[in-house]
Image 1: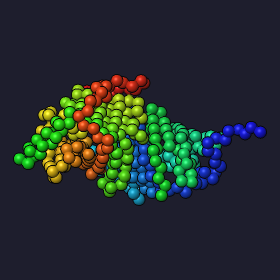
Image 2 (image 1 turned 135 degrees about the horizontal axis):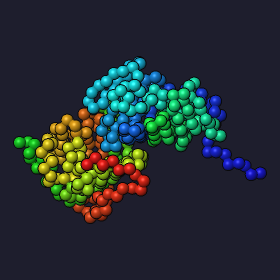
Image 3 (image 1 turned 90 degrees about the vertical axis):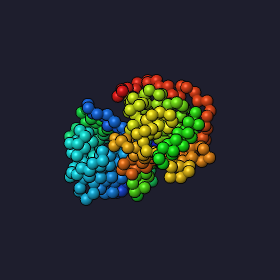
Length: 176
Length: 186
């Protein structure tokens, strides 16, 4: 009998989400673009997450550093334009200093395609999250899921809240 | 002084390069030596002041210096940023490579730590690139390395190197790709 074409990947949503929760140390190499009413830029992205700590490096396509945003044991530090800034909240620091609306803390969880309590998730029929919507107005769309190690991770993530739009293209996931 | 003759020596070598074309492997490392980015691309230089720097997978960014304007073509943003070439050189000594006899060289310090290696240091605070090092092997430019003020390093190793061959003029001519936005900062 004719079989329905099986979607490229098909997972059990619950077990996939459990797998994602176990991934606490990871690294992304790719590109990030940000657009708002006042600003638009794109940069080469290197994001290293170790549990709650992260190290986000944005660089020009030539490889020169644009900014380095780090969180270590609750303390956030930003290196930008040869100056050092400190804060307890990364998103607030970026907004106050540069006027960029980038929800850094949330992205560290959303970027894997992992649902969270305060986000409403839509699953595509292959069990993977295709969209998240949060109470504070962020809409996150996922595509280009690929096998990485034993799990499936998204390689295109776009986030939108009002006029602010962020696009992340992952060229390489590294799980350690 | 030491700078003058290394500058003269470097300019002499670069001016022998009426044109230059090579593929490159580009690796960017942070101050701890962690790999941040690796990409492949192609660099083309054409005297007196033209350059094309193209990154392929995965980055697909292109920089075209046509002598007057530097066009930064960014497919990820579907946007092109245009800079005045003479101003762009201040912030980016790479463009100097295409201009061996331009007077922009004065604002850079040139040294020759080894017979086949030159280092160009930028004196201006707002230069993206703090120092640029060129390595030759029997008069052929084989490697470019540059560092910014956060000690982030980009190393470009050249391959399939061709000097003084005819390069199509269209390589250095810019047309706005379909549907792209132009951010003209000239």
